[in-house]
Image (cartoon, rainbow, N blue to C red; front, side, top):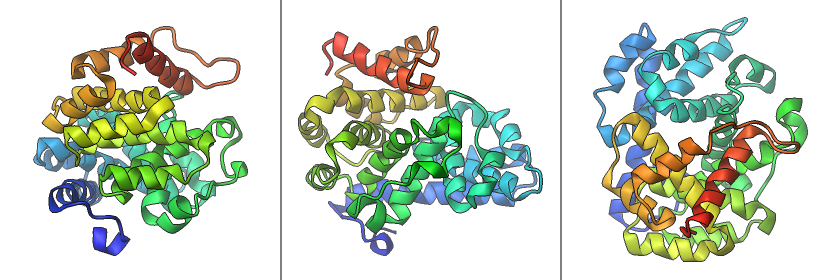
Length: 303
């Protein structure tokens, strides 16, 4: 997989960790595409190794979003999927919808854009990941940014930030979980994009793994003024893992390195930040949520 994509290889262990995530995604897509119903797909998805199951659910969500998008008038496959065991992986499922957006013509996007006003931004994150992963030359090395007019009007003002969070997650894979390569790649982007990119790095490094504690601490130092963004992304990973009911050791280690706290506290911070959450005058609630988490980490002296 890395050979095909031309991604950086740090060592065999990191390569295996990241390629396993991709293979689980592909497997989950196949589980959903070949099953007669979301309930039947769940039986297959639940057999996958717990540390990789979230990626399988993400792939399954892409399959359901694609099927919804290809049906005249749309469909309810994704809704039925999220009404079952997919609810435990709701964050990953919304990201999977973004993969489907990247594979469908834009005029079909309204049929699959998640209706949840808070989590729909994760679909744009998924779109950004897809573009950087499969069109690495353009989105990473040339640092392309999509024109705002491709997005629905109600998403246009914040879309570049959500997409950059996905590109930041993809950078972790493109760099092969190598801090030196990640820092080199990210450093070539305009500085006004760094905060969102570091947020994506924090999420991917914490959720997917591939680096040891020393390397994670190197990343934290390199993030500099964006440590709170790195920690916010890591806190998102903590919440996603806690909701799914399994926390791999590498996630706990990364959350400790980036947020300087436990998985439980990081997840609790994301929950507390949802209290009375609404759009601000200039930002959607999702952006306010992210900022509250980052601010809380700073207040606690974690960043």
